[in-house]
Length: 318
Image (cartoon, rainbow, N blue to C red; front, side):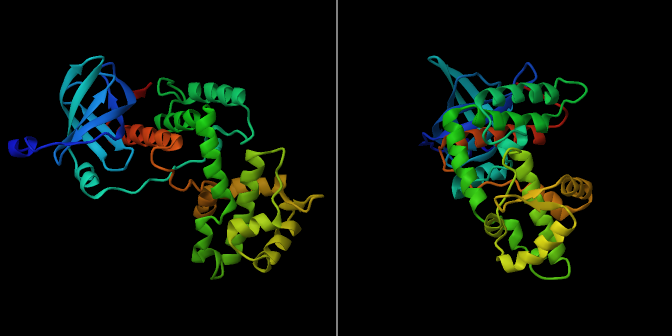
């Protein structure tokens, strides 16, 4: 970077950043740091940890003003903390400061990641995470998976904290009571495959419901209408077909539930059906409010994930 740019005046900037870096011990770390100042060339932050000069740090700002890679230009002690100067190294970070950015949605349903019920108690959250984390930890030579381990950590960070989980549940409930965007595609409305795709839509909703909450696997026709954004007249033929094939049954409360035959059909067709795969993994939550507990967890997750995926070679993570 040219010297005249590096000498550019910095403006005060007190937002919070999620950062991710690889330490000298080879482990990948993340932290929340307080911004001190900013310019077109870079940012200054206060961090509880010292960083190695010349190393790469991925930065994700709470206010979405900076998203991208930075290089550590200097690191000096300031009381019990460290003042660190970070220089932008890619266009995304610089454009993020000048133009701003929109909030990114969470990529996963955290209950689905841990494969637990939304009503699971805290002890279940802890127990399942311990088992799954040991399986996917990058240090496990047999089943280690960095990507899956990061997803588990992000889910656990939210679901293990009562405040974070309450915020997340509100967002999740808002998502689950509204129509899913995928059903707005023409694949579900027009064309010869629209009816077949609507059947897949119903089966996927019932499959996810039964897997997430096996004690309450039923979904009412009204809820199916809301989630799929179709009137019941569009679904009458769909439901007749699925009942005739014994893929779904109607319970005493008039709710529809998935049968074992229906589950077998979903699982056997998911690998070769792009539509069904997208239905089963909608990803998907509306953007969380900047600065909220869920937002902080999501930014830490994105920072770690982006840093690892952009870095060559396998890495371990703490």
